[in-house]
Amino acid sequence: MKRAVCPGSFDPITFGHLDIIKRASNHFDQIFVAVLENRTKSSLFTVAKRIEMIRETVADLPNVIVDSWSGLLVDYCKGNSITTIVKGLRAVTDFDYELQMAQLNLQASGVETMLMATAPAYSFLSSSIVRELAHYGGDVSSMIPPNVNTAIKLRVGGK
Ligand code: PNS
Image (cartoon, rainbow, N blue to C red; front, side, top):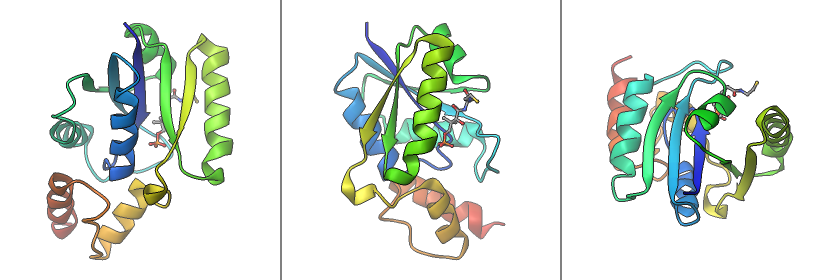
């Protein structure tokens, strides 16, 4: 069984993430969407809430499993017999970081990384842009699934 992981902070999941997850799910038997803590970022949603929102969003994708992990990504891969990491590449600005992570993870464990070109419609999109816009009352409904839009309005409205 060919298994891959789409890792990320997903704080929150965007249409850009969803596009990568859907396209990746066509190429593997199982896709694990793993919510990981990024220690360089402060979070808007708890990991449990992020998982809940992602599960609702991928409910129509039968080979997608949503999970979380608080250690190294390569250890998660090893523990779940995952051979491949799939990440979206939006622009050249993503490249240095993603290349470094891919090479590190390959060297550390032999896990391959496949960088999938983001659909052009989402090349500007990031969770941090969504958080920033939402914080100032901007309309993010074209960037995130409806359940996430509802949750973010409640979250920033209640700050
Ligand atoms: O969505 P993000 O924040 O760009 O995702 C980054 C993430 C969570 C995939 C990355 O920080 C990660 O892999 N964290 C897990 C810890 C790890 O394995 N770090 C790499 C070695 S330093």
